[in-house]
Length: 140
Image (cartoon, rainbow, N blue to C red):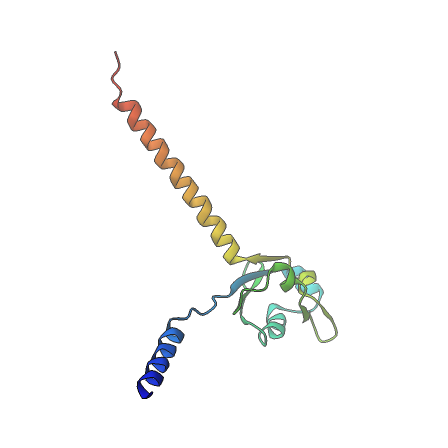
């Protein structure tokens, strides 16, 4: 009986140790600095609305302002993130899609880039093979 319980307990620990954690998604929110200034807000203020729900990092610089949002689960897309209500300034609350110029799903972009790169490499490989075949054929 003890051996059965010990084996079941060890199997449980082994299976739980090998279980895969969900990877989540990463989004890039791009804002227009002039629009942020017109709304009397900043990316840091908008980030305060998001940081209680997700892991965030705000970027400011010479170009447009941006916020990187890491969502720990896979069940959300660009539309749902855009529908999320945030505090724009002390007096105004609006959906994120009204303030953000663009919401980019970086995981989706990464897969599209990988697909394009692999298809390009396949075409280049076929081109090299056909060039080899042309060089190998004797000319009269």
